[in-house]
Image 1 (spheres, helix red, strand yellow):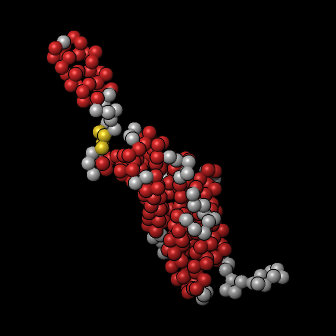
Image 2 (tube, rainbow, N blue to C red):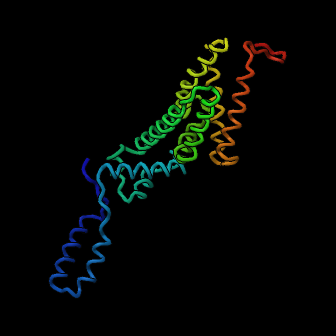
Length: 244
């Protein structure tokens, strides 16, 4: 993609040429003309640089206002370009939003899957909890985007899809542990969804609360999850009268 430039119109080059001519004819008057010519010029960016700038601006606005609350006009104005530049790079607001969401999903999934390196199941739970909380702390805008338009509690949408991907990673770990303990490994997907959903919902609350500290939140999450798994019954029974 060729370089794109935010300009005030074709008059910029004319102003600069006039300023140069004035400085040759009248050096004393050059100081009065050149500053105004410089003020008419804006930063030149390559196509790749402009694309990254638009992604950064879009990410901030989507996190603050959501997809519906953000307009192409606002994105363009913050970037100092015209609307056609946004359309040239992304085809519109939808295209820009899709790239932002895809980046955030890959970032979070990579952080979670990359964190699962320990051998002991309890430490794996700690690593998974920390990975999500680390993402929320470091990429707060990204997390707000993922949960704003696709809440954790929804069964469909970008964040629900991401949670399902993470749960698949945890499912494999739980399946091995279930086999080792003599439990039915076919139940591993159910428990994986429950564990990941618990951490994700807690993270959605913590993104605004930020108390207790991250390590304490992780410790309590693992405390609930681990001791629940540790005392797991092979054939759990209902205490109430309802049986179906």
